[in-house]
Length: 263
Image (cartoon, rainbow, N blue to C red; front, side, top):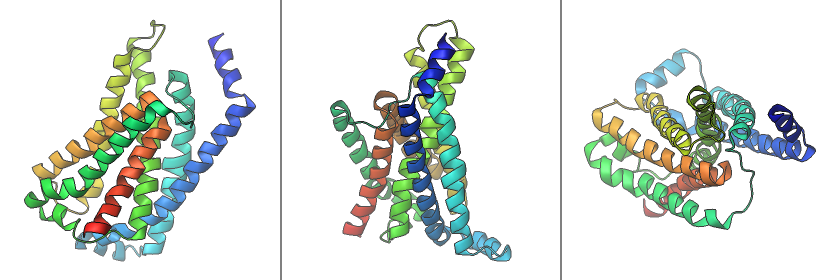
């Protein structure tokens, strides 16, 4: 009976139409953001990484096209499609809609996250690490601004919240609470914590390509990315993936604009 009810809901024309719109939005965000992120990342690579790229014959344009496919299709549409199904199954999916109760917490989290990125990161960790400090000596160019808004705001939320956090809720509930009528709140909390920690750890490979992973760099990564990941996970759980995307994407946008104004 439950399967038939779920199948009927998923096969509803309005459901399908809205899902296709969402997937198209994710695809476009990933293609544009992935292309842009690959345009500015080489400027942050170490000389060793740049030399490896040259030896492999990898041009910036090839890297950008690869980034577009990677973020648009693999990290974007594929994970979004799977995440849609899982999030609906565990009750996490909320379609894009205006929710007046979500405005204040989303705005607060967005502003706090933006200030953590700039000037917070520079003021707190810049004095202890030259690489961190150097990131905030040059105003961001357009590719970085676009990639932060689209890759950070859309694709990372698809990966870590819509897909991974939903999957964790499904796995934990099936392993430990399969006889419960409703999934306990602690399952969502545990899934949010784990996905936030993984979100932080996921930044380490890119960080390692640009600097040495010292204890202060590791602490910074887990403090900022992990802490903000928890906040975005809260918005996803409470108000839907749309508000998590808004907070994440506009945090990057606001911090970039602050850098342009004050640097």
